[in-house]
Image (cartoon, rainbow, N blue to C red; front, side):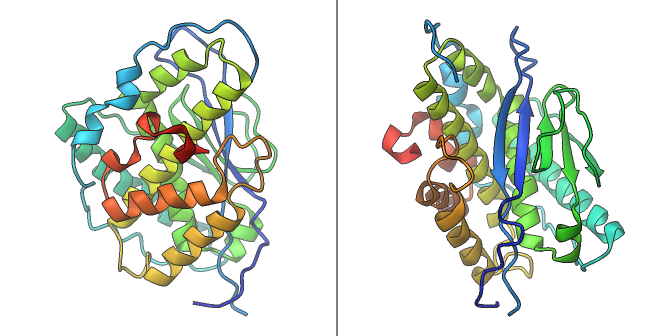
Length: 283
């Protein structure tokens, strides 16, 4: 792996948009997720309401299902400059995520539903609202669709592990929605202070990142997830993961790296219970 870091894509964001269909609220929630570049070859205040359904987040049945199933995911090559190859790669990774998480939900005795995947090359308006400036993708829970935008920079300089990690993160938000975890998120954020909302946002983002790393662990040692590329990716987030979020709604860089490492090393969703973690571990 090359020694120097290319930051051409570092500022690009991956955004999820939540319009929760499990509660009576229709207010969208916006968050963002950064995309690591490939290695170089050279809130509001108000009266609090009861936090309903807390066990859905802190004691979800998914946490007791053991390691995520290895579905022998092999999405193939991702050559530069081929939109067809990019679409094929993203579709195959999504299919792998569907298979792995469907098995996990079955072990938990929970109902599973696939998200939709829409690959685009320019901004679109989703059912959750207008496209977020600077975003590479959007997860809209209204139609349960992952919208992934392929930019010219990404097309010309693809990082297969990076894009796999990114889509697995967005899939993690889908897992949170269909498992009921976001039911608690909505109840807890209603009327919460700004500080509390930021904490809840960190819990959600760090858990999705951990879920992503759990999936990545099933491909450890393959050409897609080499030890060197994974170490590079975790280190990138340790150094850069918090730079785009001055309000600290995603966690500090070392915190992001810690949850990535935890999920990757343990390999199961039980490692990703950010909702029961002590606050200092989700700062």
